[in-house]
Image 1 (spheres, rainbow, N blue to C red):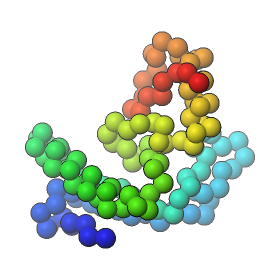
Image 2 (image 1 turned 60 degrees about the horizontal axis):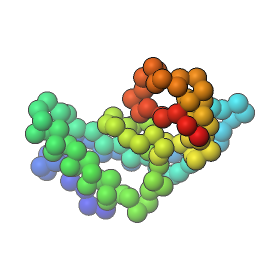
Image 3 (image 1 turned 90 degrees about the vertical axis):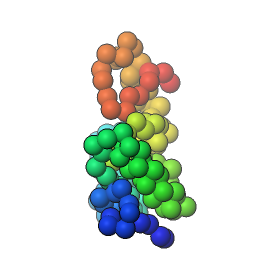
Image 4 (image 1 turned 30 degrees about the horizontal axis):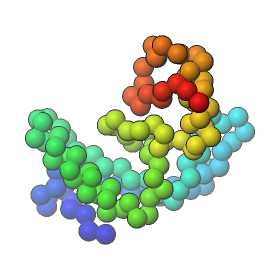
Amino acid sequence: MDVACPGSGSSLITVKLRHIGGAIKRAPAGAGALGRIDGRFLVFVAGIVMTPEAGKAVAEAAARVNTAVSAWGSGRSFSNFADVPTDPETMFDPEAYRRLREIRARVDPDGLLLANHPIAGGG
């Protein structure tokens, strides 16, 4: 994979490919909606945004990295790594997401609780 590195014209300050496995792949008894992460790697990309132009450059560079690794991806997002609006449906398996939507509809039908990646009520 060819990814531009900081110092070579990239707007990114880091690109991390984190190997995961072991305990993070096993959901312990009583685990919540995201009790495990299924996959072999997590990709983390970051840049510094101090102007709208820098924001655009960082977003474009991050998109290039995500495109470069997409062939090996699961289509899932990790909420702790999602610093921009991201579809929360990509963060959970389908059954967990369905349950979260049901809970949201029952507990917070008016959408008073705020979240970085809000889950709409329904089911």
